[in-house]
Image (cartoon, rainbow over all chains, first blue to last red; front, side, top):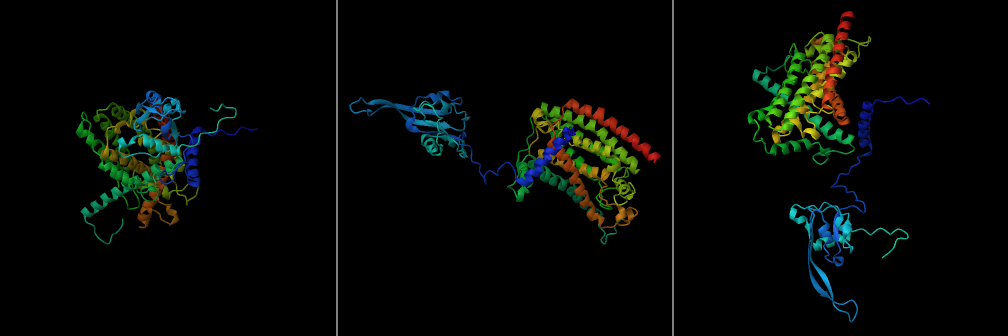
Length: 163
Length: 350
């Protein structure tokens, strides 16, 4: 079988760019015109962090592990009714403040990983830019609203231990 | 010469020439930026480029220009302010001076220099001074290195460019750009008189060398070491902002247009069509309508050549500084010297 004649790399390079140009003109670009057309981000995209307030025990693991120190937590101890009738009232941490400053956040996701009580979740929502930088500080209620956009957790693998 | 019905006074002629010069420099520059820089480059990278300002983003350039005009004209504290301010104007002025010799039709020219080629090549290298003093006066090491690289590069590639043109001058027997156009359209090749004799056919080596040298003169990739954004921020333009950066920007693309005009005159037959089509014998018999059609022919040839320049620019990565110098001195100059020798021998022998 005769070897194909070798095309010099310089010519080949010109061919690649010209080919791409005609392909774009014929089939359209690989990009989308953003404000008019929106791409759906993948389900596990790191858009924004949502907070399920009921699960948070103010253990501070997320705030301490945050490389940017962008999580602010304040809490106080209070007594909650006993779980079973006749039990003692329990002492719980009540969350007063849970803020994430998205002007500082670098979307590493360590807080989500480290949370032992499943209180933090990734949501693929990404359109929350603000004209004022101070508005990028999302408080407890705003972080709670993002919970609606959190996708369903993927199914566990067969044979995985369910807690 | 055209006999005009109305006698135009001298100041009127001068005004028309200034307007014509502005159109001849700025119109190609704007077209080049939109068609090639905004659209062709985007399509080659599988994106659409600017789409918001005007239909298909055609007003984008106006938006960019008005943005630049609003910006503050920053002059660094340690810069040599006077020279810093003059530098971009020198670069742009050399472009305007260059377009002066370009004939756009049998009578549509600004001045008819006998030594037009000589003038064009001499004025074309004035921009080096502007770039060098821009780099020097910025008081910035990146600007300084960029200016020095630009000086080294432009001087190195000036030589092959001049030597490549010498072949054309020998073959045409004239240094007047108008005469070179006439020579290409009155002669014939292979006995085919309908094709004329565009010198790209006989001087193909010269054409290649000229286009490579133009690429380097315009500091377009792969010869963009003076800008080299990954090494030198933006080379000699680092400290410029607003209006003065805009002048550098216009200068870059206007010069691309004017060099393409000159290349199309030297190698592609300029404004003319082969004179045998209409039975013309010499320049005097060319009819007046060529003064309108000629500029359009020039414009389309210019777009073709700039298209090639930009295509190469968008496709190739940057040379290394030593490779660039070696390529000019060890390859292009010997080849162009051999080209001159062969052209001269054939001219005498045939």
